Length: 407
Length: 117
Image 1 (cartoon, rainbow over the protein chains, first blue to last red):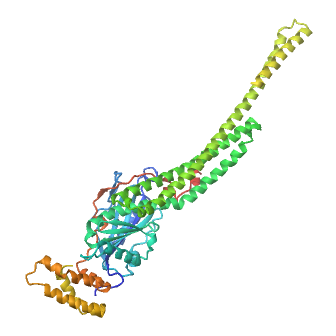
Image 2 (image 1 turned 90 degrees about the vertical axis):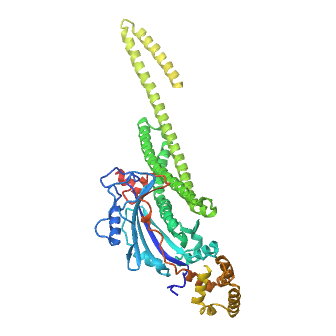
Image 3 (image 1 turned 30 degrees about the vertical axis):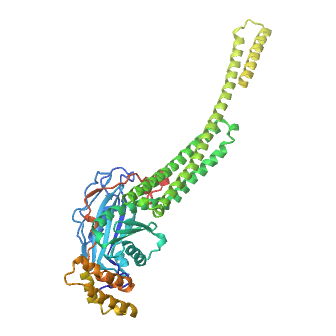
């Protein structure tokens, strides 16, 4: 018996592929710069190149490819396996949608012992890419289907052995069937385990090298948003509290002076602008999640995984839950914004009314002053006549004032 | 597994099989081997040959421990890894919508308050 570990006789040729994603400068909203690559990417690629046993710098492209909906290879050369003792190493770098990623691969041909997964992980180099968006991984393992054997039965056995080999709990996995194998996806760990029937290794393997990084990237984006959402929401809630306090104060503004009303209106408008800015961040995250969900569904349609019912639902439903959560939070925040709009309008009305009242008083004072001047125009009148004229003018002004007050 | 492979398997592992089977199973296998050998003719066509050994194969595969041995035996073909990621073409289409991630890009960098300052 050539089998080193009788626990996993079904498997052979274990491969571990690790993808480290970096946001492209255009996707991060940064202005164009001399270095086309994200911070830390070139260093990580060069480090991986040296880990492969190659001296100097990696043959990385000098400029970003202009294509939007294509994945472009960034390293020159064959990109094959390089042998180091009993292990095989590989390095690849590509663009993928709004990111570029470095892929580090370690594999061992032949039978699979129970400690091989740890051995392959330990062989993968440590990267200190703090500016990276994050990383995800996937495994390939080949399993044997005997010619007379029912493929379903062989797959069931392979799934059971994979759960034992990788120490996975069945309820944490999403099973996605392939023509000649299946993928076990662990959405929490961002790791996929592709179990491939020996005869299907070739073309199916290449297809999965295209599909799995894209699938994992979308799950990674969702993870980042959901991990950091509570911080962003706390910031928006803080702005909302400031706004609500100012709105509460604005309720008693009718009795205040014009100067005080104007001061409150300016404060409220400023707080509202900051609140709107915080909300716009949330809107952007909601859009990010919506795009990730749609991209996930697009990828699942490629292999008809969208028709899997419960399994497909387990992959998309958590993303949809986050989309619904952000939509709901935004709805409440927009209600606060509308209330602030109403309070601003109310302050404006109060200021206008107070201004009009002052305007009328000033008009009356000016008119009274004019009436007194009118008496002086007729110096020949007797004292009694001048008093009578002033009295008539004053009566007209008082009646006019009463009329204006009632308008 | 064809008739040749099954024959090779039996030649290689016949001595191990009694230890993997119960006495009744081993007795039944011997009977099956005799009846199969009796049914095989010198000029039997390949497809008939496969049909003749099929019950023998099924009997062996029904025993879990022998089944492992069968599977292990079938693995002696040359091993081959899946093509590495670099074997994919230099460019291939990706059905993904590209958007901007200012929020994610600034995570870990300066906060919104720091940017304002």
